[in-house]
Amino acid sequence: MSDSSKRKRPLVADRRRTSKSAASTKTAASSRKSTKTPAKRRGGRGTPPRRKGPIGLLSALVRWVFRLIWTITWRITAVAVLMLALAVGYFYTTLPPLEVLLDGRARGSVTLKDRYGEVFAWRGDQFGGIVTADSVSPALRDAVIATEDKRFYQHFGVSPRGIASAIKINLSEGRGPLSGHGGSTITQQVAKLLCLGEPYDASSGQTEKEYEAECRRTSLSRKAKEAIFSMAMEAKYSKNDILSIYLNRAYMGGGAFGAEA
Image (cartoon, rainbow, N blue to C red; front, side, top):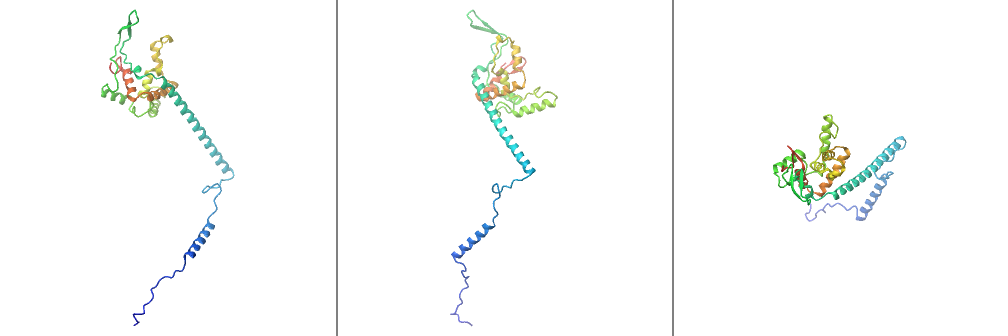
């Protein structure tokens, strides 16, 4: 047996590398790694070299055409948006106060005046008076919106989805794109009822019937003007104000104009 007082030294791994030698080793490794790194390709990191020959010429031509189309497109779009904003702003300045448009047509078709020019009576068709979207029956208000314009409270006066759907229906039924279903929103119908802000002028030589027929005329230019006028109304009045104008002026059937009638 060995003497217990003579103990073996603990097995400890020798420190084979000092801090300086370790640092020099890392530096050498990094330098070797850097020498193996491939050089950057021409045209930037990760950019493949440009092809030469007919294929390269064709690809360059395609890129140039796409860049040209993009430049022309965004510039035309910017000009169109600017012109649309100016047109909406013009119609906005011509719109009168709401009270002027809330015509309940309650005065009849014949106006009687005295020798001083003062009105003392009306005769003819009498319409019930002015109503608003808040005072009318909620059932009638909801029925008008459900029938005429389901997305009345969501759009900005014009519904591209409704117009596209109306054109599709008209074409499928063998009519012209603007014949039959119009896809008009309630705001557009109000714009048509107001004749796009053009009041009747008896001195123009038109009868009132011809004037109303002109207001109801459907053409591409008229539709464009109607859309601009509708967007101006949306900027000027609230949704309930526009609905109130409709409820007072729209033909409700049976010779009645306006909800009260």
